Image 1 (cartoon, rainbow, N blue to C red):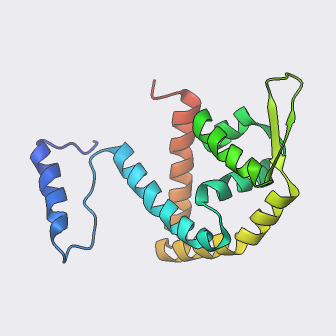
Image 2: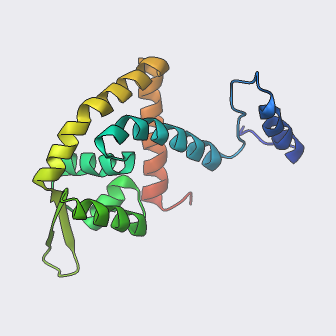
Length: 169
């Protein structure tokens, strides 16, 4: 069924073996959350490195990309699209707003904020697109097309399952 560790010593032994300088693979982590978070940190670092010369972080590019695809959306809808908590999104949007990348207007309800790319945001997105595409292509070549598509499908399925069902009930 699902991998279980009969003893926590297995985990510690596995992690302790990482100190071997000849060891090139990371140990399998027994926790799905830990594995996804580790992969997320590694992939984010890859994209951050590619976007850094342009003055962008992967998180900012992701928001620019989501707005480029979605058009005008409420902050709540954007948070849902990105499966992102409101506090983190608000902080990032505030920074991007100061840069002039995000245009905002009030919705019908005065509490609702509708967001879209400003001209400066569209410029940043278009400027960063070649670096993003290059990173995507490199990662795709390393994984291979079949594994790339399978991984994209799986991550979208897991995100949808957890985000839309509010857990695992």
